Length: 479
Image (cartoon, rainbow, N blue to C red; front, side, top):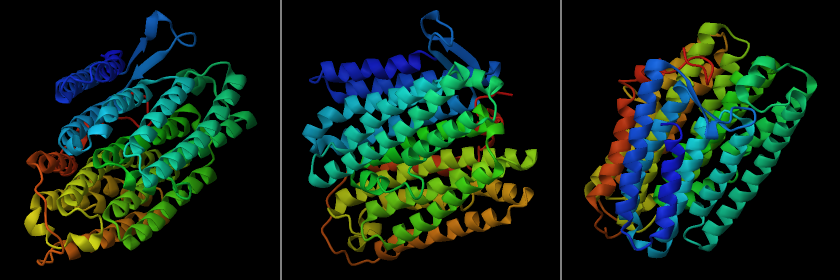
């Protein structure tokens, strides 16, 4: 199944380019179903037999390209396939009014999935770089689809930020190769030291990846890119794309060279996460545009991912394990909730023809299912039971107390209250009975798509143990 997860999206990307007259659903749905089946089968195999490796062309590392599947990566592969198929169903309806954009959306969509699968499976630092670059170009192209002034400006800003981050990452890769003569992650993890070249390399790669993940204060490119893109594009970017660079950062710090990382450096990353929660929430609260509110919410929610570093490095094993489990659940819950939120907002905007929060009056009567999906996803983002977001924040709170780092407890708890503040801004307007605008009819599949992802965010709270059984403290290692 490992090579198929790269072959399937690439083949269907080519089909969508070479067969433009073929109905889109005849290409998209079969390909996505195949990818979901392959991801599930690989997950089952990993659960039964542990981590597995695959050498492309039978060339073993370091000469060849080695692919590695473990508990964390198969979880991300299945997450990607599931969210992709739901967003694709939404896009099939949503993009009917965008005939020109639809032609380019699907090839970019498939290349984006191929890039994500390549990143999840890669066991080599340079191949991770290649995957990041392909992911960047696909995502930037999707942001620029509408080709209006705002989307082009957002795409160019995204491109420059991503390329600058790539330069930092690539410089670090070059230093590590000069130091160890290999770029295989498992090999460097065995022979790596905490000398100066290694620390400089990790510093350069960290800064580059923080920019790609849009962690405060390097987040300036994310709100216009996510807020200005088409609804299914925004959902994919917020749910999956920014998680790829975080995944690489987690592998670098927790698996590649944990001994080279000082607890003080981990506290700095935690402080950036706390700043992201405060600043992102404040900006979201002040936004008059609902899509920009959701985009700044992404900035805030990404901050929680940064707490895994101070709670895992220089602390006791119990606290570190709780931190990693909470981070994994937050990553999954945020992916479901934020994709659902962008899709539901896309439906609301489609119905009223405006993106202003003040224009949402009357949607509770006219577009109730889209608003309900928005509310369900908000439950998870706020960290309310019984959602997956609640379980994630609960584990992070326990880790903060277990490690004696009470200050992170304040930010984790306060972040949920700040989320509630800007979410209730939307509901305070949406339940006003007198509508400001006429409502256009929307397709029922748009509501079902958003509800499916929002329900997944809630259901995760009941089945949180399933993904955690595939995990171990260190990413890339299966117990």
